[in-house]
Length: 164
Image (cartoon, rainbow, N blue to C red; front, side, top):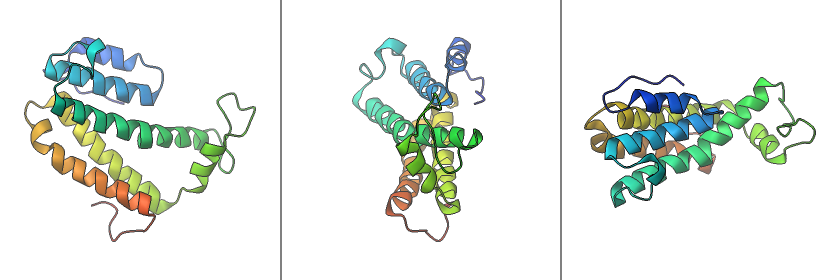
C-alpha cells in the first residue's frame, strides 16, 4: 500500500497506517484516518461522531473492506504460501474450510471482477484521502461501479465486460 502525501491526510496519520500489521488493517486504518482528517472528528470517535451522510460513506466502505477485500487478501496469502487446493489456518496445523471454499470459487472471471471492485474502492479511498471535493461529488459514481461488480460476483454469471 502506497499512500500519497496530501494536504488532507496528515503525515502522522500515514505513519499510523503503515504501522498496522496486516494489509487489511492498513486499509481500514487509512479509511478511519481519512474520515477523521476530512471531517475534523477525533480518530477515536470514528464513525460515531460523523454526521449521518459521512457515517453512511464510512459504513459502506468499511463493509466492502470486511466482506470482500479482507477475504481476498486472505486467499491471496494462502496462494502465496503454496496452499493452492487446501487452505490452512494461521498456524498451518489445521484445514481452514472457509478459505478452502474461497479457493475453490476462484476463477479468472471472478478475479477480474474483484480487480474491478478493488479499482472502484481504490478510487473512493484516494478521493477521500487526497481530494478536497471529488469524494462527495464522485462517491455515487464509484459506488455504482463497485456495486455492479459485487452483484455480478454474487449472481455468479459472467457479464460482457468485467472491467465496466
